[in-house]
Image (cartoon, rainbow, N blue to C red; front, side):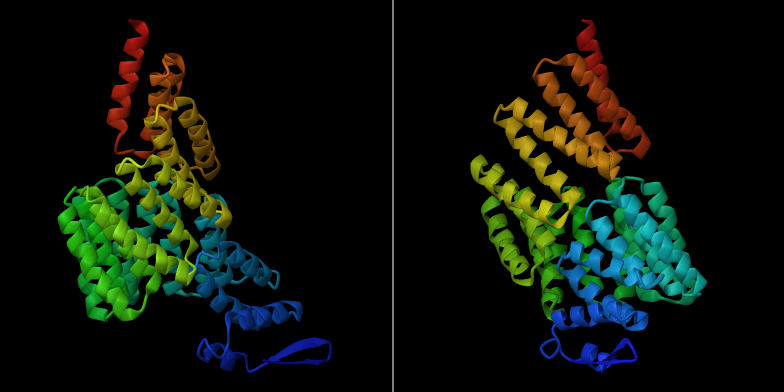
Length: 415
């Protein structure tokens, strides 16, 4: 790395060469230093170019806080669509959907001003993903359909397949498993046509998830196991680990917890090797569930607490809430209803901060059940009314069940 100072400004030589060499010749640490010098020397072109590449590497290993710092520094040199997108990714991944939407909106405006339809469509997909995470799936669909229209006009077949996959995932969230499969099956031949092996594997995983939702876990396993060798072929270690986690979760659903743990431990080893902290936390959650099903609740709590620590470390509020929710379930089954209530209060606070109303509906429903077991019927009714209201707002798939419990609780109080 050569730097020289001239006329009061930093000039960075051979940056293009540095960024295109193999990783062994130019570590990410060197790239970060290039970026720092570029920002200090007010060299926006270099800062944007290098920052974009560093952010892509860090996002793959869940270094969301570092990506946010990097993108924020780049943006001190003026508007930049890529930096806004990376900032949005980091904010969304750490449970801050509103700031993420603002960052993506800025990126969208810049891409439209630059007449860049490809990145405009990609950003519409990112915005759709945030709304999907918030439980506002109808709005998510509107953004995905906007992206799909652009991608078909410009002939971006790979992007079209990715968007079809995203639309399928929205329907999966609505428990519209057959509709999800329809979209995934449209995406799969396109991915094979364009030779996108990694995308093909991801879609096979998604088809597996849809079959899992249909409780056809043997069929789910078939698709997960088709995805696994493809990911090994393309060398995508993080996605290989995610697929091993999916296989483990499917075996857990088939009540073969020992086999589940075999796959989950393989996934955990890879995630630690590649530094995928978010994936590691998700797998720890799954291991905790498997031990819970084996009746080893203390071991389950050990893994869930490890997952919780990582989620908090990387700022993943959604993952934090998931781990807390699982811990509350174990507390409840152990008969520690006061402990379950205390943890659920933390869960509901996370969902309030992140404005995840669909998940808040589920957690309020669970809280009502816990309070009912504690014979606190009035408190249970209050939480169940919140659950029903939130479920109605988000078209929650369990809203009919929630209404039934509310009616039951109100009858119990009357009589």
